[in-house]
Length: 545
Image (cartoon, rainbow, N blue to C red; front, side, top):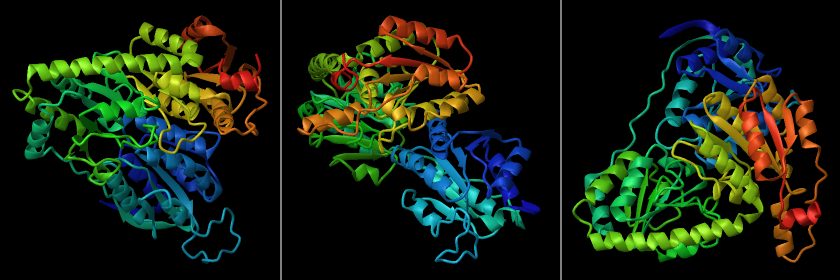
């Protein structure tokens, strides 16, 4: 459909609205004022973070929870580079975040001339992280860029992308037309490949299912496959909530445990569903796998990565897993399933013991989170950070139910993710109970977003687990025989800091006080910060006591 001569910013706003985008996360700047004016005119909500990295994490949290594209709008130069870390996180975890930013003018000299926010090759900087970067060359091309970019983002494996609009085109007028995005259906499982995989699995006695974030929505089918085989199920960090953690077949999200290579080496068949099998999720390297590896994935390139796959099935997780379970009917002897169940139960007990041992310093956090989860209906979302409290106190310790979610920055391992991602999740799914968990060191990367949560009236609970600094890095230094340096931090009075920003702040000691604080926060409008002190090897050194 032809459009009148309108500005590049107007073309953008109209195209986003037509694609169902109802909100953007972003900060206005000198070079993007026309964009924000047109977004507001089209009724698109503006969520105002305090830093562009926070905007990226907010969009990431919202996108992980909904599976829908979420949009970040920045100005040029440093704002784009601020957001780029968050885009890297989204890229490594396959999250659909779209960055829209101004760029240098079409006529900008290649060697630069000192223009405000100048970056000589901003698109090149984005392309170093993203595979989909579209720099437009006319106002009318903006609508085309939106349609093409969203087509790429919504087809198959989701990834972040960027559209760069030269700043001289944002307010320039030009004709254009709408270009609605086009998506292709996900690949369907090939019957012969399903049959061959079922034949290979028929007589296995030590089957293991590894499910990743690509398995969300296929929990019931995965449990049916596990029941047909007698298999155990382990989850990647972002797969928590695919199945009930306390289910019969669940071994937990145990990718951080040292026993994991022993478990995978002991299996005689692995079925990997929607997982990269990456070392950022499954730490002990290398991850030994048996000769029989059935892999279900929608990405043909990922299919060949991190594993020698004997039976590749290029398909969406849900139908492929369901058909594989059905294909096992009549092929499986009862004694093989019973042997598998016996093997699974042994490893389930071993994993539970390892979780209890490794999670001991964070047992109070785990106890309170599990008690809170058991007491409320509806989904619980925990947005985590790169910190030991989240590895062992939450990922391995928290008993999530099917439909709950754990948002964890696995691939890039950034710090400061939890709070802004939790804000984005709350805005996207206000019916969910959202809890962010961060360490004291990592929290300072994005603590300013607590002010954004207050302004947006976000009902969010932030737990800061304090060990006096960068505890994990302190332990790595000590394990090398180095004298820890640069890791002990002088932290703020976190509850007072929260109150200064307009949030509620409280310190809690022990699981009972933490549970009470969680319940109180659940009944309060606006954000609450709960500060707790870790009792660990690192905290004994850096906090004393």
